[in-house]
Image (cartoon, rainbow, N blue to C red; front, side, top):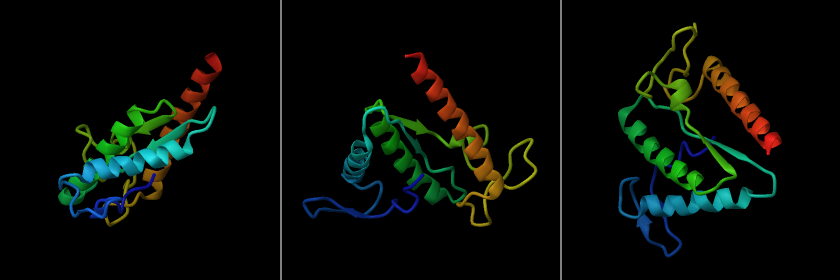
Length: 143
């Protein structure tokens, strides 16, 4: 999981500045960068599990990280060696949005900042990822 600090201005290879996540060209340039990282990780028999940013408590930060997650998911969809893991399915509420707690978990999922995972949130996500990895291994041995 990385990219939490990426929702800011970026400069394209030609020097053009894209100041905001929703500015023209930002998605394209960020997608180019994500694609380059994904492509650099490709090797024979390797699967990359790219973990999305979790739902955020702050509305503005949630909007910006949603753009990051959308771009990453689009790039992953074009690469069979990349599995996009949407953390909103694990750490989000019924609508996929931010929640402090989930039923059956007697602890906050996040630290006080509403961004970073608590031990309970990290453990929940780790269990989910281990299950996804086990599923992928089972599929690959069936081929």
